Length: 174
Length: 224
Image 1 (tube, rainbow over the protein chains, first blue to last red):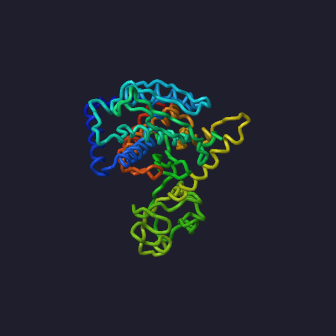
Image 2: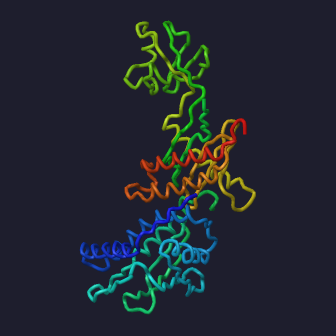
Image 3: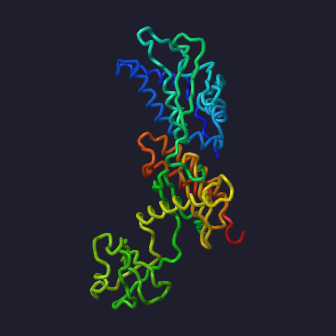
């Protein structure tokens, strides 16, 4: 099975994402609204990306949320963004964890101006994770807890397991 | 003369709700016959299930139950030709003879395929319900004396189904290859809506290519 390695220049990727965000800012003029739109777009990417991920990696179904966290950090992030965030800060119940990102290809060269202090620049990623997991029957809440663009020391994505989606379960998953 | 080995017969893709979103047939039925007839027709024809079929009379490979597939080269849809002639009436008129009629096993209509796919989707779950073990997959293979049906369900609930010659090997990896082709040419086309019928030319082309490759690689044909 041949795999096409697309060597898309990462600068072009950064510029494309930047163009997307700035256009949304012009169109909506409101940081909260832009965040929502980024999440929505991310969701639409996620529901498609999951099939590419499953078709190309050979991961099977995860048995618990910890396995899910590992697969996201070590396989998915590596495959699509070339980075491996660390998985930390587990809640006692094991239903919440953090992904700490050392670097973020979306924000290379980006600085947030003062008038966009409410903008979650990389919010697309939250939508992608939410959409992808929904397709494998997991409802999750994903948000940025810390963002280096907004002055924090690290970039932290917080993921919380809400529930298993019981409608339209594939056979054998009951 | 080279024998074309059409060992992979059909591909079906069923969405999460059991709806058929893609179907491709590549077999050439071996039982089709086109013959020229003079008046009067020595076969008795009747309408059955919205098709014109042979009710009585068998000759030259034409059997009872075979449907009229074309008249003088023009395809027949149900009881009418593509150019609007009603088949049984046309064949009653001596001035229309001699006529070339192609008979063969009636092909499944697209509605029938939709229903069968939906039925398979429901049956698929029986595999895991009947299982003595706690977690079992659904039906992965269904075998008859003329074909084997292979089914692969993704973690997201989409089913890829292939009907092939029982001797054809490599279907498992072909199923996964089709999953990749789906994730590329259907899903990465932003104008394709999820769960809807797939009408993407690039998807068709790449699927056909994958089928050809698999057939060449894995057939255990006669003489091997």
